[in-house]
Image 1: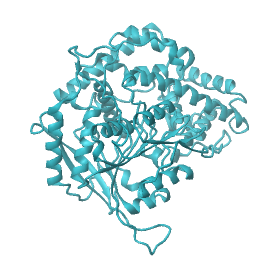
Image 2: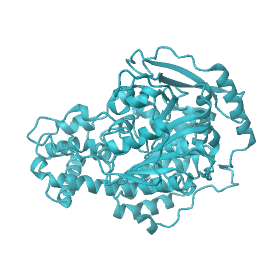
Image 3: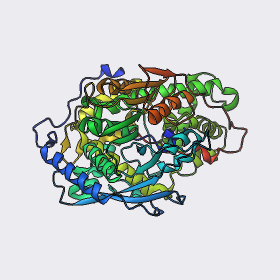
Image 4: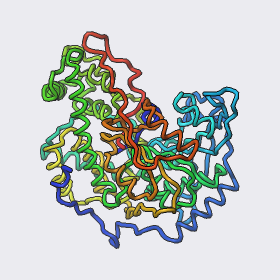
Length: 552
């Protein structure tokens, strides 16, 4: 379950049939850590005071942080404790990027816009970096916000150069071609169990004894230290996807430190959902979004020739899977790589035309577009391996997971009968948590009462697969006084600052003036993608790949 990439924020149950899954480790057992206590609270206060005194020394950005950063984007670091219960022990440094407020009103060049402070952004993940966020100020939809706020991004603990985590040699991270069975055999399951155990061991071996401290509670504490280092008395924060979860933790832990908060594509903060059941919910939602995509392809059968009904489109996809299982395209693209590029289309409907065109071209005799889209890039292996390591560490550390394989097998076998598109691949990604070597947290009960917190703006797309809509409703319910804005009949993951002017109107009114709707508001959906790039065209444009398909 990974994050909305910056691209998504900028522009771009069936489960009732499942028996409640007993999570391995219950409160009081050796592998479960109880709720944080006074030591972490005192440690946070120490770190905050230290950060406020030190500030951040911003200078030119390193190429590893923001390649080819323009002069207006500057970078620095902030020191945080690895373990907040021992603030004077080992410290780690988080990288931070900033573009100062422009003060320029894009609607009136003669008006100087007063600065409102820093707007800190996190794109989610776990495992995604926000270092690129200050670049967003050049996009028209963000220019009014960039006039009033310093745009601040950062790499959370474990990400990039912020005390990076690793679980395996990046040179071995991309394995291709790979299988992706929707109904795996017992032999395949045994193979994946062995891989999950090896991955969990690798995380412990390569990351050391500090592995346990990479979790959402510490991400929220780090956010308060960053606030102080920026010289802000109260935080203005925008989190997308997983960023909404630790944003909500922050609001629960430090409500008096919040100035304004936007939670875009909110995940479900219910402690019972973190994170095993949340991933089951996500697999259901991806099945629904895959159905939306197939319906769109079928409506454009004159362009793609993949079938005039969703069922026929499914048969075309299945035919491609079978062919790739027999012979990998370009020697590197098997069923697993096919599934990966189509999973991206579940996040961002901007990707629909390129994926449909590549599938069509492959089935009509030209594998090149699919190979270009689906072949893993060796240049991105280190970043991808790091992101995967952080994702796994945070989600495994955050909560108890089932430790009995029979639970995983039962739940995912049942779910795959009705939601085969993503179920098992989602399970394999998270299975290391069944064998995790570090102690688990008990999730904090996200909840604020009336008047404890300024109004929070929650944004959601009604058919979001990565962050199912029920999560936004639950987030709205738990944060008293928050207001939900829904993009109806839409499914792109990350809606703020994108092409929907109605959503952006609410976002600007909130960030610039502090205004929220009186009650739950909704916006009509963005226009659906324009069909293009059918088999008669040459290849697929590389610029369709502006974002990465993350898991939450």
